[in-house]
Image 1 (cartoon, helix red, strand yellow):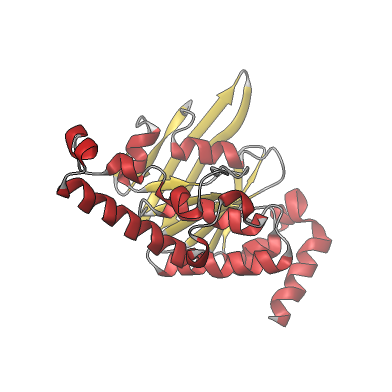
Image 2: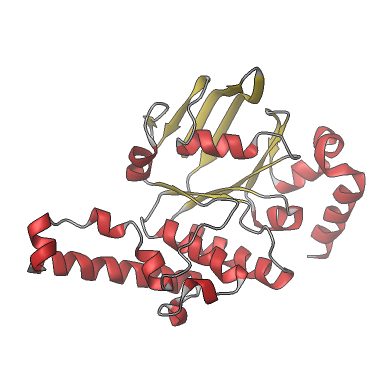
Length: 264
């Protein structure tokens, strides 16, 4: 069953076509990667899907609903969340407070309830804290809930950003280069986390340059080049496809990935 579908999705910027007639189908319950060389249109595609920029042409359907013209907050309300290439955490706040960010805006309470801290507000606040602690447990940061976010190592800051996105219980999580800047140990921990997220019921769509990470993790991969989709398939199919090798991987990388897979 498909959760996300784009049809003929296109975005032009002053004569430059960054995304060109892209058809994409993300199946519910899977980990789906988008790869391609720099300038292929990957982040622009994410911005279109999440609503940060409007399409020039094409449509986007999410959970059976046309969301092409919906603003970001409406898409989030339907169950879509994302992270960004550059970490966006509140450094002076605690880990728990970061995970809580935005959840208080959804508390079912009016101004009087908040000011007077009436029972319905206290109950909603308690539920928000419980949810924040649950996602911190999922990403492996529960024991650091009271630490300042700025004190976390780089890899943990990445995981905190993911926790904040998961606090909304999204149906689809978009991860924009989540492994960027990570060392091998942090990357392995991230792979395990993404699998846990998928196993907990959240579909994952990611953009990533680390090919080992992508090949180990993904159920399906879409390859972009110059804004166009040039191939889609399983990791094995992608690393064997001539068009992908010539446009992006190169023969040496394709051979290394094949050896890596054979040794797994």
